[in-house]
Length: 326
Image (cartoon, rainbow, N blue to C red):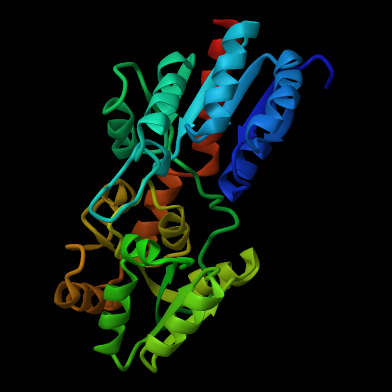
């Protein structure tokens, strides 16, 4: 173990997808994980970088800017993952990190000077290239297809995963369209799963049709049970840099209904049904088709072939080893 190179993984916020990469790297390297909390974290981050060979930063935010700068000073290799929100700004819905000159300057520094930049989708890669002209590796987010797999029996159930805490999240996730479509399909059960703020949880429960359940936060095992029970996973979003929950649902045999925007077509391919953002009539029609679809296995196969954990592991280790050994 002591002979393995040390990798430092930095992040600004704890997230399951970062935890999955920690697990991947731990199979091959010594791994330390560092939660960046602004200027007060700089000395500790510098100490961690000093004893590492490679610094791997999740999201091109303040943690990545600082990590890339310190890595250059100490002549360490730095990699940055563009996750989506960090490299976009959508002024029409006030979404994304790149809303100020200060943030643009800092993020662009990280993207320009990192030894490698990774993006979680081709769509996110285009977002990176709006700011810098350089090579970008697309390494899709992944799904543990051994854990996320079908079980016995599907119900007349449509689910989406979205924690709501403000109006922007409602728009981004297309929840208004989801609720309106649910209200027109009395014979089908709908469910929204995710941690909501108390204010928005109350609001959603008040506005939801009788056939719609507001589940709130669920454990991974509880979430898996919903994926396995649902016939359809709906992702009616305005913007998605990848769509991990969508892919998890597909791995469990859910038929996808998604907007034809951002990275969602990269995930769905030809296995599901597409709608325009905000098109309630189109959503109802697509949901009815999905509920009758028999392509459940095709959905799972697509995730296994393109987005399995093993595929991401192979690509990440190849990239890191190239930086370590040339």
